[in-house]
Structures are given as structure tokens and as C-alpha cells.
Image (cartoon, rainbow over all chains, first blue to last red; front, side, top):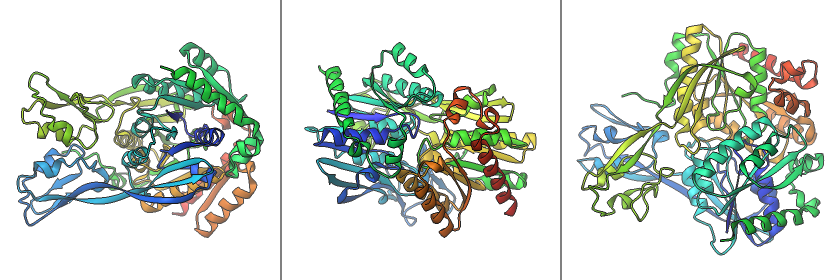
Length: 278
Length: 307
């Protein structure tokens, strides 16, 4: 069973929920798909056993064969190639690595080379198997790194996926194919606004979801009204407590110091299992 | 051919020599970028505001823009297979590097990047690319200045391109209205929309929090600014949540010769202002949070003057 954790708004507590849930359940696989700013490892301190580079294929033009016909640039939907009468200019930050330029080149002048854009790392903490990706600083495309992280999914395990903030392609890539999505939000106007956008995404791709309200007690009650209206179950409320915030700031998962929360998070899992029963 | 690359700011700068651009970033989400940007908007004079967090924009909830112009954003294309021509050879599926075509030869719109490889390899010419509307860009009036913003349709790709459009619009407005500064509210992370938000800006203010995750993400955000040659500034939000970590951040910045433009305390009044739909500096002008944001803003301005 694959459970993803998303939010829309950043900083609502996705990673905190993912890590504390993993520790409460034990024997799970935790995939941190926020490859731009992965944080699960900061709370878990895993011993890294494997590091694997992630590559994308980008074009390599053989200028001797090239007659500057411009077909590659004409083809490229992302404007990553520009052909002058003497030279082919390549803008790697725009290349999606589709391989089309090599296919359309009539002179067979375009080959490909692998460029490293990030790494994935794997390690174990207690019974939690952690996999996370790290996009290299300056690289624009997070999706290929997320794909590589998701390739490590072990189907026979409970898998928890921590997704990045936002609602665009990296989020879709992270949550796609999961059996259930936990939306972590906060009872504030920003939290609610971004939650609504994320719900639109999940409805479109047909993933059932429930909500965990973090920092309950701050802000207003509008998020509760929205959840009721949508029929979205509130799986758990985590109150705003200075102790939880301080533990987090020191990189300590709250279930370590507040073990009474383990049971609450296990109950969330039970609720999800009941809801996803075929 | 029109390039939508995040380049070309140079020309604009020449046309408008005094125009400055400040991007507010964070790496980690939820550190207070939008709260701080909104307050800066209220404190600043003669500005254009650009909300570059196009997939989860929140700034409008504090600035209440009145939209005067809406523009369709056609950021990407989608492959469409003409069933009447298709012979089910599956060349398209086998050539697609994004696994966007399934065993039944159906195109998954979420995975399709609109690259056109399938159309090129199809021997029956059964596939064509169709433009899709991926979102909308807006130009709006606020009481703080004109605002350029956008909304990417949920789940869409190419947020970087939409950010580039928002910034292009903001520069146009700045030129027309003869403004001094573009204030950019950036998205979290360090990937394509963030890169599109920081290329060519004069300074990037990274808003961080004194948590282990905040420090980790600050480091990556600062490395990103360094990668693109952008001058960094740092602001520590909720600094009193963990003073030891705040001290670490200040030391780190000192060591790397990065100016800490401000430290803002935690106060639940910030959420109350948000619920009221107001910037904190207008909601509670006498609160320490507001005082410190004002001081941060003064520091940002004087660091601009030094350059």
C-alpha cells in the first residue's frame, strides 16, 4: 500500500507527519520525493548505504556531420537548441531530454550524453527504510530525480511518500499511483487556499484523500467547514504546541520524545486502511 | 522564434537603468516569504509586485488585487492520437521517454510533456500536438502598486515558463509606470520556477527559520543564488523559536560574508493578520514583528544603495 503526503502550501508539516508516521508504524519504506529540499533525513539521521547518480540524456552535436539545416531546433518544443549558419547552440537548462532532436536529424549528427542532475540515497533507521533524492543545485528539473526515487518502491511494503510543496508537475509525479493521499494543512487562509488547489489535483487523478490539520488552534475554522463540505475526513489534529515546534527545530521527530503520539498515528493508518478497503 | 528562456534581462536593464529587482525566496516552504513580501509591498514606494509562486499563489489574499487584464498561458502541448489512422504499432509508446503512453496507446495528460517525439516516430502520421491552456497570467491593481501574478492550472507542468511570463509582464509595467523596484514573491524549492524567479534579479532575500531543516534548505537556496551570481541577503523568521539555531545561521552568514538583513520573532498575531486579510505592518503596526520587518526592509534598501 502506498500512502503519499502532500499539502500545496509549504511548511505545513508534511515531512514531520511522514517521518513520525513511519517511526510509529515501523517496518515501512519512506520515500522523500521533495528532491529540491529533502528534509526527512535531517529528522532521521540514516546511515547511507547506497548513493546512486541520476542522469538525463541531453544532445551532443557532432559539428563535422552537421550541416546546420536547423531541423533539430525546429523540432524542439522547449527551445533548447538554436542553429546559426555556423554553429548549434544548446541551452541545457531548457532541455527535457526527450531525444527528439537526435531522431529528426537527417545527418545523424546528434548523439546523446548523460548528464548528472542529482543523486538518490538510501539508508535504514530502526525499521524504516529511507530513500531520498537530491537535485543538484542549479538544475531545474526535479521530475527525473523523483522518478528515480519512486522506482525504489517495494510493493510488498507499506510505503510512505513525502511530496514537495506546490501543485505542479513534481507533486503529480510524487503522488501518482498512490492508494491514498494525506493532505497536511494548517487552519489559516493560506493553508486552506493551497489545500483546495491540491484537492482539485487529487480529484482529477482519482486518489482518495483525508486531511491532517497541523497547528490546530491557530487561525480560523474555515478549513473544517471546507472538509465537511467536501466530505474529506479529518484524520488527525496536531495542536500547535511549542514543545513540538522546538523538537522539530532541533531535528527530533516528536514521537521520540512524546511516544503517546505513536498510537494516534497508528490509528490514522487504521482509518486509511478501512477507507481504502476494496 | 521567441525564446522564453530565463535570459535577456540585460536588455531591459539598459532601457531602464534604475530599475531594481528583489526576489524573496526560502528554499523551505512556509517560512514566511509571502507574509514578508506583503509587508514590504506596504512599506515600499514606487514598486511593481510580482507573485512568482504560480502553483500555490497566496499573496493576493493579503494585497487584494483588482484584475484589469487576464492573459491565457499556453505553456505546453499535448499529444493527441487520431484513432482512425492508428495501426497500433506502438512506436509512440516505445519512443516516449516520459512513459506518457500506456499499453492501450492512450496519452496520459499528466505525464505528456508535449515534446512531439511520438508524432515524429508515428509511421501513420496519426499523432499531432495540440496546444493546451496551462494557466492564466493577470495584471492587477492593488493599493500598493500594480501586481503581476498568475495561476497555473492544478497539476500542470512548465511553471518556470509561466514565472518567466509574470516577470516579463512586471518589467513591462515597471517601464510604463517608471517604477524603481520589482518585488518578487518566489516559490519554495530550488528547481525550475525558482530559477526562473531569480535569474537577473539584483538581490535575493532568503527567508529562513531556525530549524535544522530551515538551515539545510537555506544552504541550498544560498548556493543557488551563488550559482546564478545573485547577491544574497538573509532574514531569520521566528528567530526566538530556537535561539541556538539562529546563532548558527548568523555565524554561518558571517563566515560567508552574507548580510543578515533582519530577525523577526514568532508571534501568533501574524496568523491573526492573515485571517483578517491584512499585511502585518498595517494590522499591528506597533507589534515587534512589524518593527522588525520595517528594520529588515530598511536594511534591504540600504544594501541596494551600497551596490
